[in-house]
Amino acid sequence: MAFFIAFIYSNNKFTTSPLLLSLQIEMTNISDKYETVIGLEIHAQLQTQTKLFCGDSIAFGAAPNTHVSPITLGHPGTLPKTNKVAVAYAIKMGLACNCKIERDNYFARKNYFYPDLPKGYQISQHTTPICVGGYVTINTSTGQKNIELNRIHIEEDAGKSMHDLDEQFTCIDLNRAGTPLIEIVTEPCIHSSDEAFEYVSEARRLVQWIGVCDGNMEEGSLRCDANISIRLKGATTLGTRVEVKNLNSIRNVKKAIEFEVQRMIEIVENGGTIIQQTRSFDASNDTTFSIRDKEDANDYRYFADPDLAPFHLTESFIEDIRKSLPALPLQLIQQFQQSFGLTIYDANNLCADTATAEYFLEVSRYSTHYKAIANWMLGPIKQQLNETAKDFSTLLLLPQTLAELIAIVEAGKVNFSVASYKILPELLNGNNSPLAIAEAMNLLQVSDTKELERWIDEALEGMPDKVAEYKRGKKGLIGLFVGEIKKISKGKADPKMVTTLLQEKLK
Amino acid sequence: MEVTEQLVDKLAHLSRLRFSADEKIAIKNDLQNMIGFVQKLNEVDTTGVQPLLHMGDANNVFRADELKGSVTREAALANAPIPDNQFFKVPKVIKK
Image 1 (cartoon, helix red, strand yellow):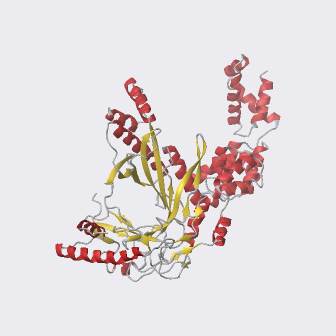
Image 2 (cartoon, helix red, strand yellow):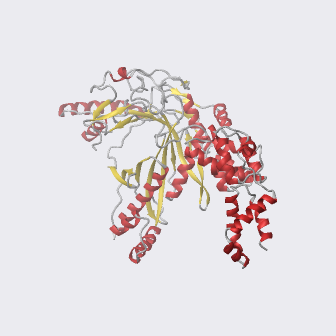
Image 3 (cartoon, each protein chain N blue to C red):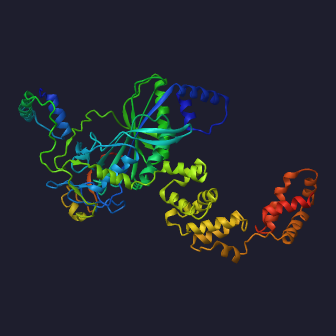
């Protein structure tokens, strides 16, 4: 039984064998008995120039152990000093998430031994976070939902251990050690893998949007751990939780939760007990595996770091940061819907990042065809940008030039597909006169009746049987005729006029 | 608070220290004395007194976000017990 269930859930594309189907239905009913409870921890590297407590660069990809100072290396006699920008960035994220900002702060030492932690302790605010409470609003299939935050705190990153570079040893690179992080911790209030996916997407958009983290999950600038448990619906106590680490993409967050929930349900349904574990996600087969059982001596002995003075935040410092916040994605998405009549889908995609949103706003100053701007930006232009791995901030196409292109398409001077396949590539290379390109390439639509009639006649002569069918009442064939005329005219025939002329002619 | 042998073992493990049987007895007595000394404070009524976390008056000591202070890799690795020109090398943490 368990084997079959596992099989079904690891293969979404199974055939409709009646046995499997009935098992699937049974399994769905079993899943319905349980509620999933998820809390997420996101570690986001702050986009400062230097580390949290010293002046080493935090740039990714440098040669191993070249961004290190005696402070990073934990040498005796060195003293850390807090990076003010890192503190400001943490507050900025707190304000963007509606958190309460703690005025009186200090750093504590979290003591544990690991080779990539040179001092033998991590400097953290684990017990006294700079941001308390707050929430991140996500869109779900049933409307908006606030994912409540427990806290956001500042801490330093550890170095990097590589276990497979050397036969005999683990190799340590301390470039990353001391990089400033914020840890964003939710309450256990996420109830599905889809909600988790939306939350991580939104949190990632937010840190990028306000410019505190580049959000690059592949390079580890943004990392996510998930605390997952299940309980019977209606239960008020939390089930035993499992922590899944190593989730280096938003898709993997979703996959890991799906796998883990199913694994837990199977254990409980088979009369077993879930043990508290730390597990890791294996992206090669979308499963998780145990890396350690409940830590027996998980005693970090936190205490205030005597090397670092406490810091007290003034109202004016916090207010200055509040004023520096841009309009947040959710506000802008609403504005795009209300002011420009866009769908939530378009508005959301236009607010994927600040560069896209700003570009849209810029074009909207030159054109009131808002839906067309969205279509151009999210269609052919976005496609081009994806192919070249670029974004709207580096686009050679000027906003007013796009507005001009939209104007000539909307006026019927060139059709959309000709404009996107022939004119747009020229504009993306920096040419900024769409009309001149259309003229030079002979792309302007012909609305001269004589020329259109010539193309119409040519098309209809080529398919007399279809014409006869049309006349017998198969009116849908008109699309075929228009398409043929488009082909003959190489896209220059104005389709509206062609349709009118055709209807006349075939009466 | 009584310092037991069990507590000494736990602290030794957390500190990655190893004591011989004789040392264990000595450290146990030392710890018991230290705790007894600090426990004296329990005799004072500290209701409403904020814990003193930092000894100095300094606060809000920040630095600007400016690059400085890194050393060469050669210097960084100079004192490492296992010589290498790129990495700090330690016994295998995870065997693959």
